[in-house]
Structures are given as structure tokens and as C-alpha cells.
Length: 191
Image 1 (cartoon, helix red, strand yellow):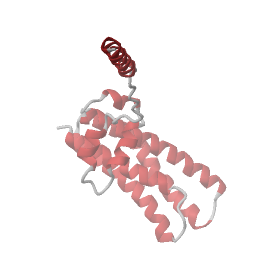
Image 2: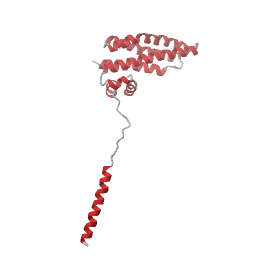
Image 3: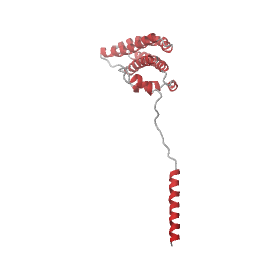
């Protein structure tokens, strides 16, 4: 009987270890659904204390351009990307203003849009030289040009407020202002 009890105990131990081994052999898969954006460290540096834009705006703006993935911590490259985004914004905003003026030829809104048309026309004309100044790290020239773009966006938006009419380009003005300020902040960190 002692031999039978020993055999049963050994059999139970074997089954126990076999069951444990099978359970341990199953792999555990860890799935990560979100990655840390490569631009986050740079955006925290320039956007963390900014009164003009926040970290989230910086991440979304720079993250929208594929070149950011390869820029590492190159603030000069990020500044050039922000300047290019500003160019695209100003160009599309100018086109939107033109289209709105075709539909709203009179009144306070049209008057403000004509003012904005002139302001954005200037930004669009200056942006190739501005972007070249950013890429060439001609800081004084680049900063002056970018600040003029920020002022133009703000002046456009302020015109609607002064005329007490709703602005159809609030989002575009806000983005242009923030992109210009972002490009300046990144350029400042490039040295």
C-alpha cells in the first residue's frame, strides 16, 4: 500500500508540474497602442512655458509633417518645418479669403476680408525669403519675418473684432500666429 501511495503521489506531482509547465509556456503578448511622438522633447522645451502656444499644438503641428520623424532634436530642422507649415497655412488662408470675398462682396465682413487679403498677400510674398532665412540660420532676418507674419494674422483677426462681425478665418489666423511663434521659438533654440 505504501508503494501505491508513493506511485499516486509521484503521478500527482508529475501532473501538477506538467500543468504548470504548460501554463508557463504560453506567451504573454504586450500590446502598446500609443507611441511617444519624436517631437515631444523639443515641444516640451519650447512650448512648456510659452504664452503663445502649448506643447500639444507643437506636437500636432510638427507631427503633421513626415520630416519631423527624422529630425531628432534638431531645432533648426523643426524651425524650418514650422516655417513651411506657416507658408502652407498662409497660402490656403489667402485662397479661402479670396473665395469668401467672391461670395460676400459687401458689408463689414467683406471689408475685414479685404484687409486680411492684403495682410495675407504680404505674408505669402515674404514666406519664400522667410523660409530661406530660417534654413540659412539668419536669425535676425528670419525672426523679423516670422514676427511680421504673426502680427498680420493677429491684425486680420482683430479687424473683425473692431468691426463687431464674426470672423470666418479665426482658426486659420490662430494657426498662423502660433506657427510663426513656434518657428521663432525653435529657431531661438537652434543655437
